[in-house]
Length: 305
Image (tube, rainbow, N blue to C red; front, side, top):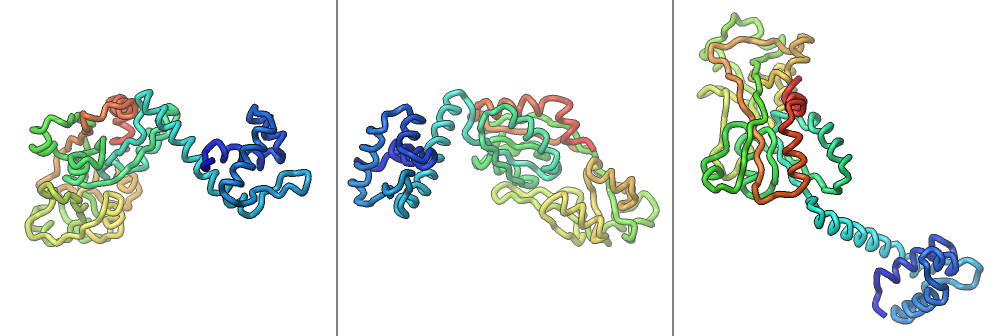
């Protein structure tokens, strides 16, 4: 007899219940059937799995090793069975979501908690990309859903017909500096010639295939490039540069005085951010997120203060 999941379940039951008789009762089998299965397994493996000298069935070192690894196989088999059942009911095994850091991940947490309550079992895999990188993750198949994508989708995606996009809402931008930054005392509105003399903090575009996107930078301006919005905020709070931040993110620091709002002669206008998804993905998990992202309350949670 080859090693089977059934034989591993019997081995597991005997160890948990402490005897062949108790395991047989738990498995709704006769004790002789379990005894036969274990003896046959021992013969096939040419090892002794149980020390039968006492009243309690005790595993030998070889038996314990088989059970330890076997339980991993049993867990994997059970998980596979559940995934197959969920897939048959229309729930994806995994949903890959890419977010632009214009929406901090912490704002996604209540949405994730609500999704967990569906009991779908779908694994959520989040990643972060910036500017064209968000669209690129969707276009190259690394993501099924993009949230917070800035600018409109690239022409290549619109022409393919394999994607859908929808406005999530608008982001209001504020130009902010730390109180100790030289621009904090500059008269408003600040002209481009003065801005150009000071280093800007910018979030780097993570795209590798699509043309890169830059926003709010002046030609020839020194730049400190960081990974995301949270890092940009930290750099500006430290007085290491200037730049625009989403007002919803900057607001607490503007109120506390940790940041100073300044007016510029070339103010950055409000910007629409989008959600986008692959039309080939039609599972229930994606539909759940699309429905929630269409609700004004969710949009305010993600884009508001």
